[in-house]
Length: 103
Image (cartoon, rainbow, N blue to C red; front, side, top):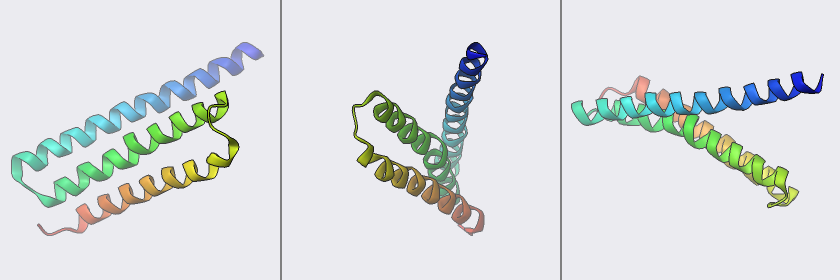
């Protein structure tokens, strides 16, 4: 039973890491589209995707590791959650802006 639990935990981390890499790749491709066409909508899309996927997950993952290993006290758990949620919100906000932008 313990081995199955460890496998599931490892799969969760692996999928989260793969999602971060894939989100970074999609954000980078959107950035290339912005550079190629000088489109503000593509700029907002690329920044939104990078904030939503890469930045938010990195802060959450590193923060949880630091909390779990005791490098950060539990008083930092809520601020880390606030930072993560703020990055996610800004990412979605920029993606929404990119979809409604006329430029």
